[in-house]
Every structure is written in C-alpha cells, then in structure tokens.
Length: 296
Image (cartoon, rainbow, N blue to C red; front, side, top):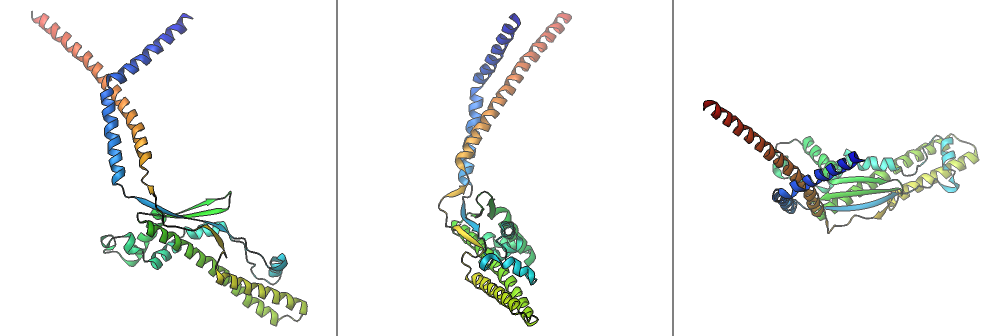
C-alpha cells in the first residue's frame, strides 16, 4: 500500500516537473507557434487559388428489345447483343490517355495549360504527353460511388471557366465514345443479319431476323440522338464560384497543432541542455579547485 502511494506521489512530482518546464520556457513555445502559424497563413494567402467544376453521371440500363428476347435471338444468329452500360468501361475510358488527348486537341488546351517556355524545344509527341499527364495527375479526377451507382467527374484548375470547359469536354468525349461503340456494334450486327436473310428460306426465321434488324436500326437511332443514351447527367458541370484549394483554415489549424508540439519538444531539449550545462560547469569548477589545491 505504501509502495503504491509512493509511486502515485512520484507520478505527481514528474507531471509537476513537466508542467514547470513548459511554463519556464513558455516564451520559446509561444515564439515557435507564432512564427510557424504566421508563416503558414502567409503561404496560404500566396498560394494559387484552385477551383473545381464537378459533374455527376449515372450509367443508363439499355433495354434488350421487345419482350426482352434480344439476347436469345441474337445468340441464335451469331450477333452481339447490346449490353447495359458498363461502369468499369465508362471509368476506364474516363481515365484513358486517348480521352485526355482528345480533350487537349479539341479544346486547344496546350496554350492554356503551358507557357511557350514550357513547350519550347519539345516534339509533338512530348507535348502531347505533357498535356496528358497534366490532365490525368493534376486536373481531371474520376471517382465511383458503387452504392448509388454514380460516377463523379471533376476538373480542378486555377481558372473556374477553364475548369468547367474541361469537365464538359470530358463528358462530351465520353458521349461520343459510348454512342460510337454502340453504333459500330449495331451496324456490324445489321450487316451480318442481312446476309443471313439471303441464306434463310424459313419464313418464321426470316421474321425473327427482320425483328432483330429493326432492333439494330433502333439502337443506331437512339445512339445518334445521344441524349441519355449511355449515361444520364444527374448534375452537369458548372462554373465554380468558391475555391477548393488552398484550405487555409485547415492549414493554419494543422500548423498550430504541429508547432505547439514542436515548441514543447524544443522546450524540453533546451531544459535538458541547461541542466547538463550546469553539471558540466560544476565539474569544471571542482577540477579547477583540485588543481589549485595541488599547486598550493
């Protein structure tokens, strides 16, 4: 029991010693905190403002034709049935190099993203890669919400109008790709089915083939309309009015916490060297006295 009381008393003494050290060097701690927080605030004010234009889309489930018999009929005649919009395919294309290149060229973004000095002396291929990497790593972001089956496409840039342009261009290229693929598959299926009619004498089979051809023509017509064909735009990209970077308040709060810990650490380091310095000074005085006494 007495040992437990002794340990508790020693803990209180140690804690009191720690608090004493902190109060003793409070000016040092305050100076460290003030310098780092002020410097962080100034840096955050000097940092370039970044704006984000965001769009939310949802893949559209494509029908398989009248009565839902497209799949079985298509397999019977060796053609590819139209599939529902594939989220993985959409995300894959949104993150692809070819999409970034098309956005760069159609929107003529080279002069917007780079200065003449940045592109001077570089080949056409090097310029393209510079633009692709800038879009993929710094500007265009793609995220998937599996729970709600939603995809978010955003563009971050220092000019809010340019950010909106890029986000819109990405959606336009996605539309062109998805509708183009659907039209290509439907046209290939239609041509194949037309050759099957020539080799088929059974009127029932011919009727099925004509029905499948009609479905392919319908798919092409829907793709040409483009409106909500492969995906539905839930929230279109707009010109942003508020910045997303830098997050000044968060930066200052983090700087305050980090600088506070750093200040306390430096206070204990300083206390340690002050105490050891006193010990070494005492040792020096004693050794000096010994030498003096020997000489005497």
